[in-house]
Image 1 (spheres, rainbow, N blue to C red):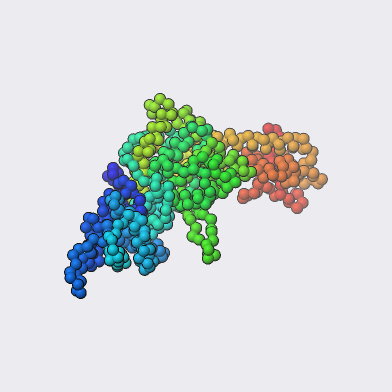
Image 2 (cartoon, rainbow, N blue to C red):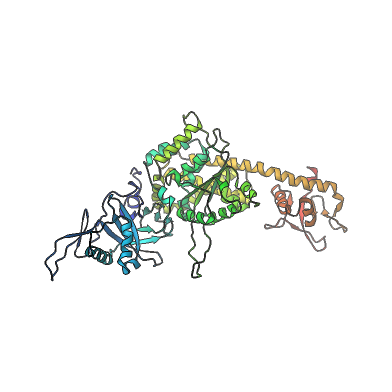
Length: 594
């Protein structure tokens, strides 16, 4: 393993802090361990001893002739006990070495050790344990397993990511553990466990995947976003992310694959074509990490908006069990990346749904085909974008998974610097606000916070020695993407604002006589003074339509053409000169001149 020498050896390399589920890999080895299960420090009960080829029994019998050593099974080790943090779910952790010399880790509930022998042996046989012929060998093995209770204790967890709020131990989707506590994952993470392993080396990943990101802002954003997940919990932040939108074959999926290479193989990227129930399991299997979803249009337009909220809010649906009690609800906090040929807003529209501001700030739409070469600005000596993409994909296949392990290890060692991380994020956000002369638009600020978080994570990964980028590379590249988002948003907002203002201006010009001076009686549509025109809500709805009235008020307010009361209301309560002091829409009279 070529991890940087400054990485904490106690955190990353101590084998007592790294555990594996059946079929899960050690970050420093291939998919299965190629050595027998160790019994160092795990004293076997009296009468049993271990050899390289398995477990043996030898115990003189007072009633019969002394019996020599007898092999009872292939290598097996009861590594320790485990239970959940609340004290339930007691189990034992076992390592089984199969005939291919692969070590697989099993988690067997304590109830199996007090039931039928066949039930206890079944999962061991399924994992490749071989048992000598005869009832005596099986009985001795069962007896051994039942009385073998090592002192080592593991924390049993059902969610990928941080084990607890100490943020000192992290569980990966492939079951490997980095940190200070002994832990074991008791859930099947499916494709994420299979694809969330390591290959190649960190140095090769830096040279072949991270290095080409330099000069390519969208690539910098994608890879930096991959480091966001582990920081969400320690910083007390919610999940969310970005949606790369653009024409087919322009590099969107490649951006997701590059981001996924921080965590595993390219197939770590999943399709939007699934149900919201399945996405709950996906999110929980990627908690405190990255969830990358390709091809937005494949998910139902009627539920896409709800899924965006669900992924960001980090909580699944409450479901009832057979007994009528609620089942445990999956929870998570996850950094998201998405891709598709259309925006979330356009996709929702195909299902008759409107996008809400909360959805826009949770999954930020990014144009991903407007660079010089689709999603890329620089091809780093490659003759065309096709060759560039193919080279990147092959590099991510050969080298992946190491960066996330080292990042988590160094993050654990840097938990006392959390305030520094928050301050860095705030400074990046302030720089964006000042650079684009932005006002107090809360929605824009929430979006910029998401950009600043990704930029900070990229800079932290660089400081940890993982990317090879120069200081400021991630921040400057991501701020360019944020600037493009702001410019595109301003253009997109300008048209509906102009249309709403034009409708109001046209009506006022044609019917100004229906607005009387404040204090006068006989109004038809409202009142006016030298500065403002006060429009009855009923009139406002007649101008803009009942369904468009609220949005029209928001657009007027965005253009600073609306006078409102304090708070979030878009209306104004009339002064005492008007009987009853009704609420109206107060439009700047300068609209008539413009």
